[in-house]
Every structure is written in structure tokens, then in C-alpha cells.
Length: 295
Image 1 (cartoon, rainbow, N blue to C red):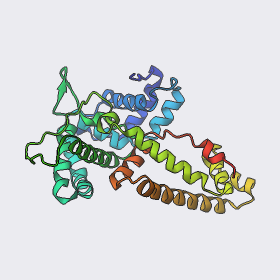
Image 2: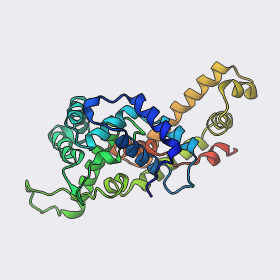
Image 3: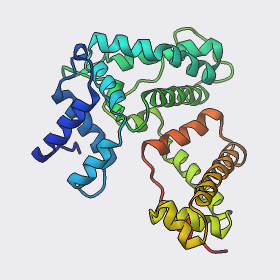
Image 4: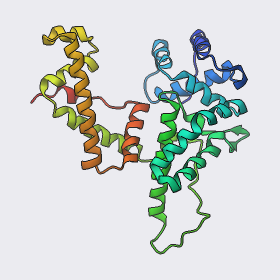
């Protein structure tokens, strides 16, 4: 269900709009910007209790607003905004696609996105574009790389499912149709839940393997939201020591999760990156149980 901001949210929307300071020649009006914020908030709070005005404000202030403004203007079809997008991201898209699909297939993979991003399709007279599904939770470049990974994995899956080993290779092989009315996460990769479950399992195992004192330190910081100074007083450590040990624990967790996904779970590099990108979009895990387990 689309979330519509109450009139009381108007000052917040106007403040964020001024904060972005989008170039006037992008043609990004306040109404378009508000609609993008409403789409983002709708995605974030989908399926839960109605958020308070404070919760919505805190969420909106956490977004990458300049990138959201650019994507919104591009989605609206503004040619100058599109030129700005091409200038910033064309080279980055080609590099990312080459890393995913190799030099020969990388350019084709990147180029295949442009029509969908530009919004050549329309439904009921309304322009539809993939930019509608960028919600500003990550950087625009990060989101684009995630889409490239999704497209590449989907194409491999489609090829394995529909082609026999004896099937002739043609140069007019149609790509799978994409329903732009569906949420991007479901359209681009129907196995999103599987990737998130694999990441949660790997992270939970890594947390349980930590020393009890390390789990307690992480619990104080991430669950109980204590400051470094408060944690130091509880554990009898200097504030700098707490910071250093938290940083070390985060690095160790990342290495262990990475190793588990690539080794035990046997995911490819592209699939591992999808796990992380999905989690960045909306962190779905409750790690309270894993952090509170005793040995």
C-alpha cells in the first residue's frame, strides 16, 4: 500500500528538498520529490504498523538524497538529468558489468539496462522506469551494480532452464520479460528470500562462534544502543579499547561470513554481493538471540 504523507510532513519534505539543492535544469519539482520520498517510505515500512511522524522523518533523513533526486529527475524523463547520469555512471557501469560478465559480455549487460532505466515502456499512459525502484537507501552506483548482478544471475538461470546442450546458439535470443509494475526485488530475483536466509544463517553461526565477552560487547552496542563510554564502564575497559575491539569483531565477522557464503554455501561472487546488497536495502534480521547465547 502506498504511504501518503500527512500534511504535517510538509515542512520536513520542503526542508529536505532545499537540502538536496537539485539543479534547476533537472526540472525536479517539489511534488515529484515528495512522491519519491513516499515510495521510499512505503517500501521501508511495508507490512508493519503505521509509522509515526518521527519514525518517517528519521528514515527520510538517513537516505542518500542527492542520488534519489537525480534518479527521480531521470525517471521523469528530464534530458539534462539523464545527461548527468550518463556522465557520472556510464564508465562505472561498464567496469562493473565487465567484472561480473567478462569483457565480451559486460558491455551488452550494461547496455541492456539503459532502456529500462530511461523508461521506454508505458502502461496506461504513464511512464514506467526502473528508477522508480531506487529508494535512496544506498548509493545509486551500489544499486546499479546490484541490478547488474541480478540480471546476470537471472540470465544464467534462464539459459540453464530453457536450453538443452544441443540447442543452437542464435543472435536473437530474447531476454526474459520484466514486469515494471512488480517490486524490483521480486522481479529481478525471485530467490531474494533465499539469499537473505543464507546470509542470516552464516552471520548467526559467526556470532555464536564468538567469545561470550565479544558477543556481550556487540550486544551492548547494537542492541542496547549504549555509548562506547557506557560499555567501557560496564566491562572495565577504556573507551578506545571498546572501539578497537568492536572494529576487530566486525572485521572478523565479515571475514567469517564471507568465507561461509563462498565455501560452505558455495555462492559465486555475484551471489555473495547480492546477499549484501539485499541486506543493505532493508536489514531484516533480529540477531538478539544469537548475541545473547551462552556457551
